Length: 115
Image (cartoon, rainbow, N blue to C red; front, side):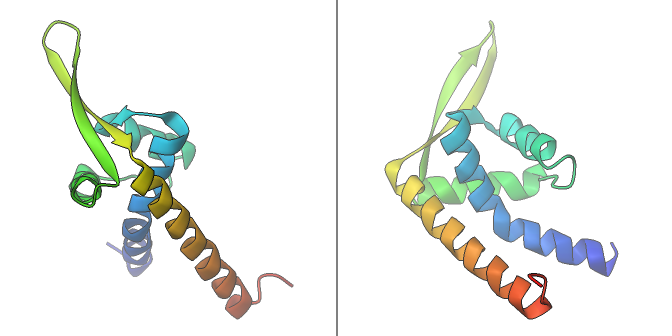
């Protein structure tokens, strides 16, 4: 992995929680594969969240009571686990977005991208 890809990977890991919460707010309840596909599609392939990063983040969000999960039978035999945004998760999303905007503005200022 090149240094650039490694840096992009680290940045993405810090954004996964915010993106998952945002999608659950905007799309409603979703299952894991659906969430990863939405991120991939909406970022036009720039953000690809591997299962190894996404599911631990989802479990952490459940442990912190930001989301809940439930199983739903699809078809005759398939069961999917859906994730649901809780009020605490909406508040957490607001905090993460505020932090993101603050950091992005600071980076733009340092890089003088606003000129």
